[in-house]
Length: 50
Length: 371
Image (cartoon, rainbow over the protein chains, first blue to last red):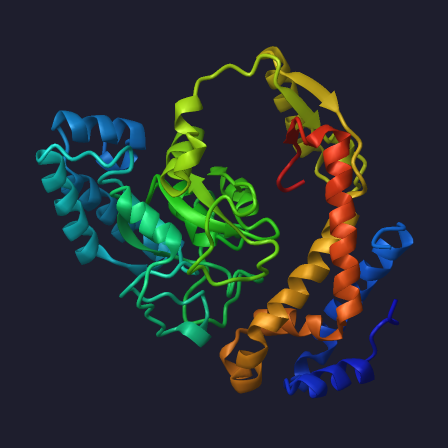
């Protein structure tokens, strides 16, 4: 499992895809991204997806 | 009583016995839309002129002895993600504000073949993602029961149009609840058919692995009639009135009953519904399914990854055309890598298999739409 996202990893992912990440929206996007990664962790913890 | 208040069954009977014309019926619905839609905002585009032409054609065909079935001459509306040749199809977004498709979606073609009269395109959360948004060129649809309340989404206009008495039946789409949720919020009938039962050609995708097309209607019978028009092999309307004696109902009560966020009145209503089904002869079998949060987690990862892939080019070129909520929602998927998505797909397959083995393969599931 990849680690929980940080501002740095989110910014790097956006840059890699050539997509602008508006500064004023970074906090909201990071919150949603963190929840998505938590979803992956939840599935892993439940022993699914192996 | 306005003809707009007639069920499709009653309107159809009057169309056939000659006491009502499709033109008069369509005019009644257009008058209702003119009176109420300025408050409800269910419609993005109203196609009055074209609708009246189609209604007149239906009347002519009927006079010639041509009967295309229960939707022949009946006004309908389509969620504005569904392509309609020559009619603007916006996906609820500034990105496609002036998009006029050159071809009909498969579902629009089937409704046309069934003789339905398209009176307009219905509001959707932007690209069926998230909402309601208030920074789009179109106002958000309002819940007819209380216009201070949201409709649920994303088929917001479809549910508002039916609940507000503007139309008896509409078409919506459902990826993570977008037929079920607005139908529940607005107190109408939503039907999410089996995956791939309805062709999705010409419907702007949200997440192709999870997207479904289906009816939002005023009653079960009208949903069945609509389903038959877009998936004729189902024969749903012909089975209306069949008893349910012996039918197995898989009651997933503990999916939500122990959830502190679930409204106790919803669980009580679900218990009451299960009791009624039992009194009607169904076999209620309480089943324990994997935790609901696991389904939500797998679905969210798949949906966000697929949605970002679909929108990446537009987000690179014109991010400013997206509403704030949709743009933020899409950008969350940036942190998912291929391994995350492959993992979520495997997990989803295992969860689906668990449902099948715990009797959902042979039963009808019973659970709340919006606990």
